[in-house]
Image (cartoon, rainbow, N blue to C red; front, side, top):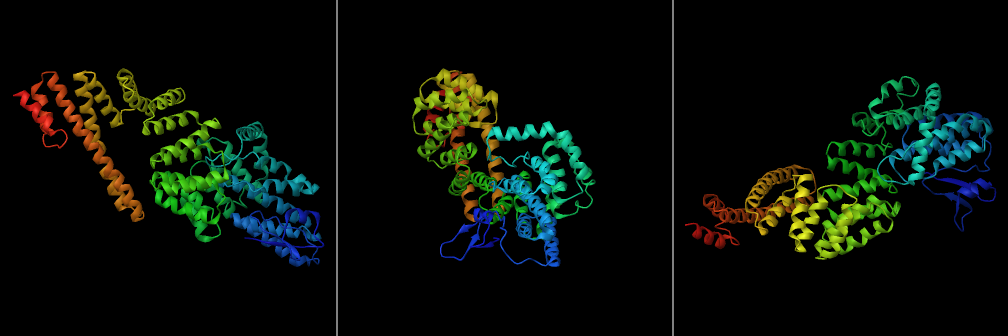
Length: 532
């Protein structure tokens, strides 16, 4: 972490604002992620040395990594007190601060106040105002990347509207000056990447107007991360050539996750997290990944870290509720869901997961009230499926049947829904329909079992830790065992349906399938005796 010392007695007012005083120390030490630096009363620096330091700071900007830009900002800020390079130092500091602000939005980190710092520098110098004022306005319209909302909807909307209203004018201005300096070159790409439709992105063409910058690591990073997808083959050399480019890990994780390589994506996310922890996009991503991997304790840990940074973030609250439900902690999940309802966020999802928890706790009347409210907000197959289950527990067979049929119309790939519908139809004595629905459900379960075995083979062949492999395999084995019991139940109920329809041959065929089963064997043998 960079540090800047300030002479205590002679520190300027600006220095006193940005330094944290340590009692008993003769000076003050600035210790923060934002390294603005303070002008201190030091002997004048020789012009030649100042020029060399300015050139070194310029090189850091071209290097382009976040830590490089922070280092450049520190040096430029120090040089603002040197008369021979004061203007260049101020302009460099403002540009570096603006680039850091843009990078934070691209990374989805917490806002460290870099853009505000750039505006302070510009406001203090008329020359920088003329050079950079408009560029800072453009930078302020750039969106925050990733799904973690860190600004209000009103702020995000205003940024978008401002950019779209000025897009034509700003695009002309940016193109005309794209080759002038680092900030202009970067903003030319960043603004187009944000506000030109993805299908119209022309990165190679955009780079032609900034020949002095297009081959620098600074601009190469932006070119490789333009839009929603990342160009991993172009990103990897940046990290190999300069290990300081730690933020590249985050962008590499996005590309790997997009292709389904979740283990490799998580390795990069963990490397990014090790570099910077106040990073909601990373903590949220790790929480989601651990949830997918069924590592519920770690998932909750990273979801909580996200909520510590963005306390009212609806998606993280919902993810925590889901994770607690999957872990069987239904009462805890209900408490989390109520947070969503209290802040009126994701109301449909909140009502659905509340109903799911209540059904698991056998609170069927409360569950019904919540699933009815969820049905007003959500349109999917899951809501009527859960409604059908709850209605069945409440002995409302007609309602249960209608809900299961609606669920199947919305999505026919849920084997359980077909099974439940078959059970309800059987209890209602709709024998032919019962047999047809249950036969389809069995075929669905058999297909699902093949898929689960393929998943287990892939898990065993993966590079996941052994304990994680074991946990995921056990869950799939348990699902297969449960489904096989449902298949046996479906076979017996199908036999009964055909028997009730006086279709003896079909009844015998399905009764024979369960004759050796501990639960249904005796009943199947009795049914076969009645067929003789």
